[in-house]
Length: 139
Length: 405
Image 1 (cartoon, rainbow over the protein chains, first blue to last red):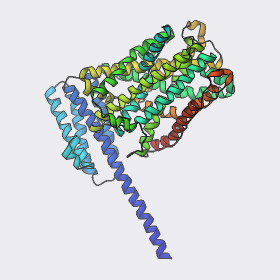
Image 2: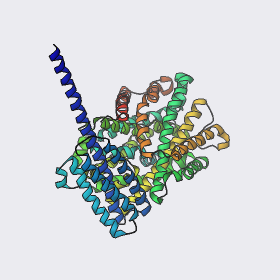
Image 3: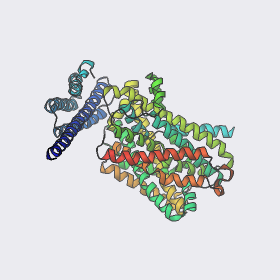
Image 4: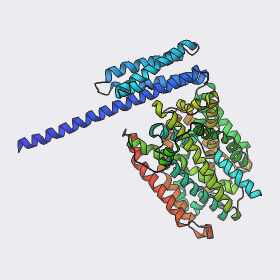
């Protein structure tokens, strides 16, 4: 009787642990996808600015918003326990720095274009943390 | 000949006035996250709004009553007060979102933060209503709103997969993010079936002095205008599905929205987007402000008409002035206009039964409509869609707020 009760409790515990692992993994993926969304938005805005399609004021405001959202994403990621967290945070910080640098490089078209190209790689690397196949396909 | 001109003008103004920040945002979110899967929500919302707008125009043309007026007469002043509070709060939130939309468009154009535009925009909205006539607000701004057809041009230019879009007309279950899928569906329904739309339409019919001979005209305008209008929303969804989804972009900040047109039209696309957002939101903000003032004035039996001098309808003018000031305060506080929009659209869907159920009772009342009462098809379609929106909002809003996915 006692042994079977222990087995039931153990099974329940396993279910709870399994559920929490699954939900933390899902949370992690969702958070990374959100970060990818901000990086991709910054990259598309950057491309449009390089092509002279959008005004400087809007570009600066948009990049500042995406930068702040990326920082928030990084903070939320830090609270999720996942084995991929450390590597992802490194890439995310790099992407955040790139977006921050882009805001100060608006008058230097060459640097701005180079930073924008860097974002392409960072978006690809971020995507690879949740889906390794994404590296092959690219953003 | 005069009626044909009125029909054409009515359809054109309905199309020009259809899109606003709610329909742009919710359609863009749907396309960017669920591809063409949520086309059905726009079609369903469009269908419902055709029925409701047609009914509100018919009520005004046949009985000479607006909706609030008839609801107060039929259900008494206690229910009217409840309606006034619920619809008033929801409309105020939607108004603040539209107001924010105008400020965001100005921020995009100038690079100056949207909060800085709150006071000038409030003054312009107030001045247009104070000085303008109903015709200026209804037709003038809506005609300018035809610029939103650029979304349709953009979608067609992208050569979308028509078979997938048609497939999206049939409702399907979410593949991922189930709670968010239903939340976006509810927000789309809320954006389409805003009570302000058909409340304003019935007041407009009285302002334009419609009588029973306008029943046919009203039917054509409601069907044509709202169908073409919904088509613009579908175009926004198509653009988001084709341009943002492949890049992994989810629409969570208003700065992402111009990306719907920039890749298609380049520099012109950016300015077309800014113009579309600014004009569409200005038109909606004017209409909602007037609708809140109409609602209060019609319910309490005050003088009301946008064609009268403000001096002759002081309480009506006071209500719209107060509404503008409150919306301005919401924007000045710095609440994110996009988050406010999505929340207010979902809230609109949740509160739909409050206005629509009594309205349907009125539409079946012989003393108002005589031989023009609703048929069973109109009643069933509207009740089903409202029931669906209500149930979905009860389920998906808590799930969304408490982090379900």
